[in-house]
Image 1: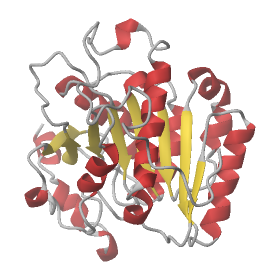
Image 2: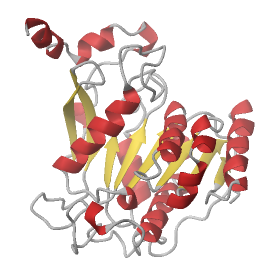
Image 3: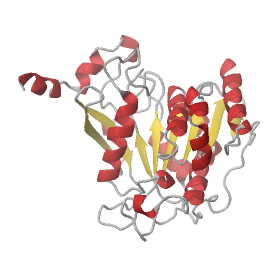
Image 4: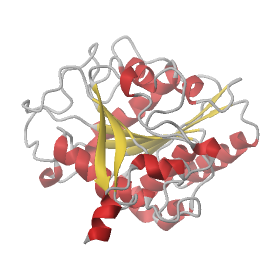
Length: 316
């Protein structure tokens, strides 16, 4: 029993200090920068080593636990050596708010999947941690239990950058009964989960989008091949190659590209509205889903005045 208490007392900071120097970041470094509608939280995670593991929840304006309104949720998976604070650049919260302007309201969760764990259980980089199980079995149930979410695939989606783009694709294919869509920014080639789960992916009508910088070298061809495989399989998809952009989430997300990603998710939410069983609506029943819209967007469509046009070598 004493050993059990000792394990529970191990802090996130203790585990972080065991990482290589290049992978270390100050725990909670972004707390002071968060706006009023963003919450820095922790959940006790058995899968990440019996520690309180951090995440950030960005709530829509006007959010109230007392309201009947339930909101779709988008989960962001970070890149290699990063965490829930998403690097030192301008706050990604600002980017998400700008990209989502004009769309129905949503909750956005900044995940910490472990700096180098590749969203995999017991990866060689994280042999004692189970990143995939943490997200699927602990974090998502925690979010659904504590926030006003649409708790089914018709209101749940994934964004991911680099390593996180790889993770978003993996989770999208493997758990297409949980996620409606994913957008992979500077992701990787097609993971084995695509072919292993093809029948289920097609039945669940997963929607996908790939965005890569035109100056990312060999990664462009890798992402192109992933997109080609998805398109050949008949899975709804699109590809955006952004001219002159290197490996940078801010540059890939700012402006039209992030907004187009949000549109991908809301198009899927709209199309999935009649596909998910009513008992899995997280108790929403007949309540309004998504809340008031920012600027007159329709549930699955473009913002009022039209979404920024796709550009720079897009394909669909």
